Length: 448
Image 1 (tube, rainbow, N blue to C red):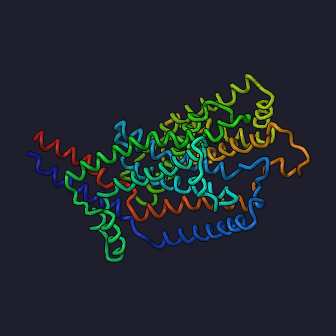
Image 2: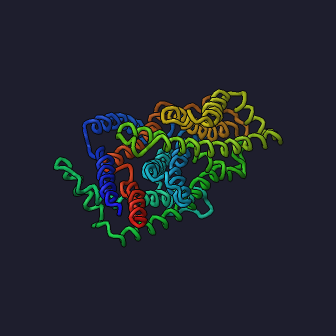
Image 3: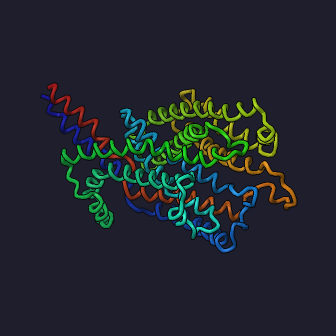
């Protein structure tokens, strides 16, 4: 009879709960970081106030280029949010156990980016007071109505996928709060919904999570497919493509993987979670980034090879602008530094260790944002109708300081949401980390 096993398992549970709950709570570093973000956000909100007061004339948007940095940022945010579905939905439903310590981090990223994506669209509107008209008078034929609907649905499902698996940890955490965090213990008590760790509760929890995972997979596919249709239903050169749906999806997985790797490294280092987020997790995420990048590279080749082969007049102008014209430095920098070079480096195992893969992920994420900018802006600078009798500044798009500040403000909001969720609640699911030792213990006892 293996009498020592239950005691060892209990020690593991105590150690895991203590380690994961230790960073929870508001400390001086949190206040300093949030204070800095708040100051930056206030400056960005003033920029938005200026835009609201004076109109979109304070931006670089004009009659020809009426989609610019804002829409590129929106597409990027939607893309990054899909990491929650990829990790929890696809890999979770396939039964990969290694994702357990990082699944909640992926959901935090999904919630933050999806929540702010809607606000980014509002920043692109000259009359945000007319936003309710989209719901009141929206036409079913319009991809814009589909986009608003599916983004909202994805946000709700992501919130539920974050909150429902959090219930057991809330019950664990409320008993570990000291007197200085009494208010947080009350929040945990309310949000835990009287969770008592009964087997029946866990059965319901597993079924509920599985249903949510099944629902979020088609929703996530729809969210970026519909976003791609906002471009693809237009006959403009550079957008008139039938592959934009899968092309946007694979690009989203690349951006999401890079964002998750960066978050993993931060939480592992700053929250002292080396025992739970291991080099093996970075290695596997690096391999996942390689896989998604290969597929994304395939779609990138298709995006330019087919129109380049046919070389219609409008396509020729567009491709020339990208390959050797005004946008060539940004285009080639994005393709080489943001996709091809990271893909090659990550094929080697030393490059998939925590620090190297972190640096590579920064380049991939920056390239992902720049790629959305390249998709949006150059196409709009070359309409079919000739540009006549308009000022020179109307012909080319140049983001203004106000526009840039508002874009930075949306990124700050994402960081604030991630920071708040990560400091109020454990970033690693305690009860799921303990499941494996519990199963091992049960198997050992049965064998004994």
